[in-house]
Image (cartoon, rainbow, N blue to C red; front, side, top):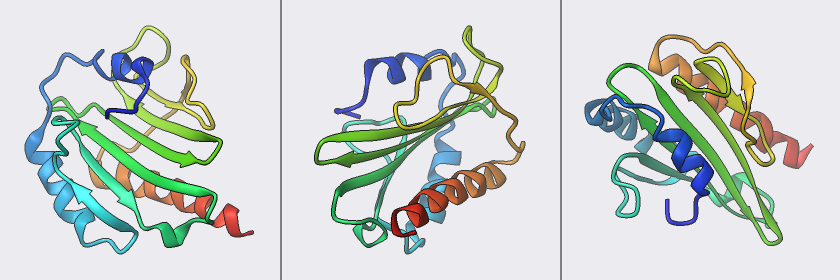
Length: 148
């Protein structure tokens, strides 16, 4: 991602397994039909190793200028899913990761608003569909909080 942090990029690169492009294609196909997303790019020009899903702006108040998920999946089952919002005066970042790391257990979360490293140890489901369901549910909770 052209506007992503170098810290996030280096964290994603900790995984030495090849990117699972077949899995990313399936994820992109599945999310392309999801009304939450205005656009799903697989792969976008600026990030050839990931799927980028831009949320429909109707899920957000006007102060949120852009919201997206970036998904990278590896052949060994590891992943990094980054949620990013752009606001007029800043941003919000949250990341779910499964990979070997020196800063956390294999499954961990870098919580918003700034996705710090080290993050918080976590436990994710083993299946990719269940992981996506968990992530999408957490993002929905955040979206609902804007209106509550």
